[in-house]
Image (cartoon, rainbow, N blue to C red):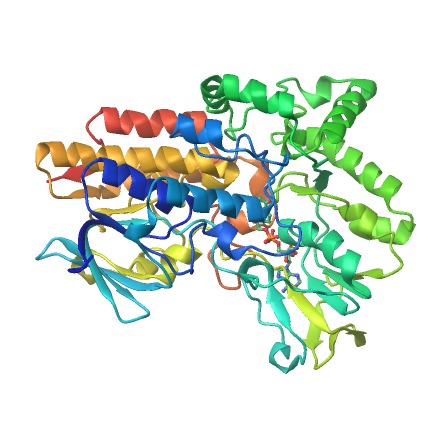
Length: 530
Ligand code: N01
């Protein structure tokens, strides 16, 4: 690394960055990853909040590029906790000897394309410069915490934590009065755990959310044996489903089912637990009426679980189910039966101010000793635009994306030669099982670089027309979708001033794989290679 010049510079050493290093090294290329954190794992390095775990089953949320790896690794729970997923990332880094190509504690601040030299020059916060023929942004979709500007936050005298940037040392809430702002996945996972420790917990809810029980527990040894004996078949099946998860998706219409059939199917899925609840019927995300049958079922469950009818009503979501990402919980709704938990509505009266010792809502002070901010992320574009990316003719990506992201396949951007984004906006990414999805992107990008190396090509750039067509295609699908009728981080509506554009590709994983692989098979159609 002495001369800081590589064939490829990767930004990020999460799951995408790790696999990229492995692939590129196997191709005989020199590569280095610049990582802001002090260790590998990306999302799982930063999100250490109490209760953090994956909402996709362990046997599927894992790499498939190495059969030895998937055979030898032993998951202990149906849904792996954050600590185990982080250990897995660390194991992968060690097993494939990747750490020697990673520079930790190195936050990239800018990436400029030097046209004369045909090189990307990356500058980092430590004042370092790293050059590469290719630059790959493996910066993750949910890696920049969204920190709303709460009036008076700086005057709060106790500790303030953001779920997306949690301290490494255990935080002990025993005996404290704690406030949690937000009721998304991170809050819904952490609230039951924090409530178990705190003297009192105030939950500040702006939008009630749908959550399905995880029914987490020790992993079923028989299932592990079965999956491991047939891993390739399971991975192949997963790739044929819209979200890339091997599960049973019912194609029948909810509108044609009898009330008994609806109830039986929802109950079966509620008891099974997890995200595939929304696979109960084929038209839940196509028809509002069909969607309402599932939403009504979950609302009835909330009313059954939560004893205080007023609190139960406050917890019942009114928007469609699956508009925001569905949450998966362990005892979330039950937590509101504790005398020590208070739900505070901040929809009708938003948080006015945070004082030295309280969160003030509607003139009333809710006194707390510690505050947890669970307000999510500047998703999909946040981490890419945090780096000041300057392409050909000095054009800043921040300017190009001022009205929303524009990308060809979520992989490359016109005007930015030899720059790739893993699971970028315009790809299915966050709507799918991220591990296999990012592997598909890493394979696509690595194969593309291999194609160029074999032919002595120096530069690849997405064509403007191809990019425009892809952006139009992504938008047409989104415009017709029920999912885009709900405010969510998919739309950027959670971040003040962010353009309102549905960012991921809603066409499903199989169609995306088909299209992106066809582009490659046609000699990278829609790209100019020189
Ligand atoms: O963030 P969110 P998250 N005043 O944006 C509220 C993944 N993930 O970190 O809905 C008051 O979903 C906001 O309210 P509203 C998963 O993909 C996965 O929880 O905007 N409240 C909302 O309730 C997930 O979807 C796992 O009205 C404010 C909350 O904060 C994604 O990460 C675990 C507010 C933010 O919810 C993001 O989840 C955790 C304000 N000013 C996360 N601003 C797994 O299980 C925002 N809110 C793998």
